[in-house]
Amino acid sequence: MKHKDGKPGSQPDKSSRVVPMSIMFVVLCGFSFYLGGIFCSEKERFVTKEVEKAVQSPKESSSSPLQIKSVTFPECSREYQDYTPCTDPRKWKKYGLHRLTFMERHCPPVFERKECLIPPPDGYKPPIKWPKSRNECWYRNVPYDWINKQKSNQNWLRKEGEKFLFPGGGTMFPRGVGAYVDLMQDLIPEMLDGTVRTAIDTGCGVASWGGDLLDRGILTMSLAPRDNHEAQVQFALERGIPAILGIISTQRLPFPSNSFDMAHCSRCLIPWTEFGGIYLLEVHRILRPGGFWVLSGPPVNYENRWRGWNTTVEEQKSDYEKLTELLTSMCFKLYNKKDDIAVWQKSSDNNCYQQLSSPDVYPPKCDDGTEPDAAWYTPLRPCVVVPEPKYKKLGLKSLPKWPERLNVAPDRISAIHGGSVSTFKHDDSKWKERLKHYKKLLPAIGTDKIRNVMDMNTAYGGFAASMINDPLWVMNVVSSYAANTLPVVFDRGLIGTYHDWCEAFSTYPRTYDLLHLDGLFTAESHR
Image (cartoon, rainbow, N blue to C red; front, side):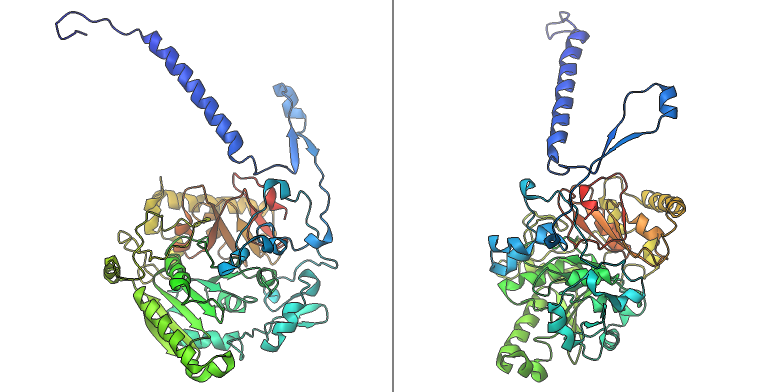
């Protein structure tokens, strides 16, 4: 090397650079290790088994069995038999009443977490097998009398001897859920040809609507909070119907944007027109372009129904007009309407959303930088999440019909780091082979002994897809800290949710038959 004056310059000593770089490397590694140790220190304050493995010679390791030291836990008291740590009614008084925020997730701090085994109720029996379980379950497994006394006149359920029976009734379908869905299919022909595959039922009751749709090829996520109806979600899961605890309140639901093909509310008592229509905006976010929102109950058919709603015809007319105006401003159009059922369709034409850029328009287009799919403790926004125009096959009519869509790599796989058509197909092939091995180890897979399954650490839903012909359903869980692969799961026609396994899952005890963990451990599995 030469300086500007042409004189030779001194060459840096290579060894002098290596030492500082080595020190920096060691410091960074140590800091990374430290962060890894504290990042989820609250995750696993206890473990069910401790593996003690001494350093052995090759000869010893080949002949000596792995040494395992068991750790025992006490049984919780009987009052915790239906314990849901993050939606615990005993803690409701600590939280606000505004918009029912006390029913949202509020997980206990580390020092309040229970380190005991949840006991079953007295007289608990193995659940009735599917498909018989759709119509009946053991009373002692879900021993709740309040809901039986309050809703038996509406045919939600009734107690006979040792069982609860589910006649398929509901507040808005007194002739039975079958007749109700038949009318809905007349209004939405897309429910018949495989166009509509995934649905969400907000305020699901005992999930009779979702249970009926299973035979029609539609997979429904039944959603309800833990409220005065006691155990709606527990009844659903005991019956073998997909369900999760949740409420539209102040936080986004734990699903990505543009996910469900259809959303449903049957007198779910959600005040759709209040708070600037913020609950409708969340339905709009999770509904894919071209998807349907179905409403039965107030204020639909108010002209004939208002007398039974403890209100006046003027109030109901005003509510219906407000609802229509809000839906129109969010790019919904009335698709069909008959008797007590009204159907709106979310626009698949992005030109509709251009008008939302005007400063005096409400609701405005979301432009605050919040990711459309951010949905783990993410506050609701009073704005419209506009579908990404770069995804040409995001809309309902653009997707292949079911079951073809299960095996087609969705457009949104390109948004995942390392995601491609080839990685998608490789994942599917891998799980088909693994399932063969699983069934040798656990022959109950594929029989009526296993119905409710959770894949606790899914990527593209390949495990669920490999079992699509078995008499079970899978809750696909994507970590809130992992790559966002959940949109791909929904685009395939499967269902799932975001979750952080540092916390308890949004379900009741004893509700899953099989938990699948691929490269993940959590103490939450036992509950």
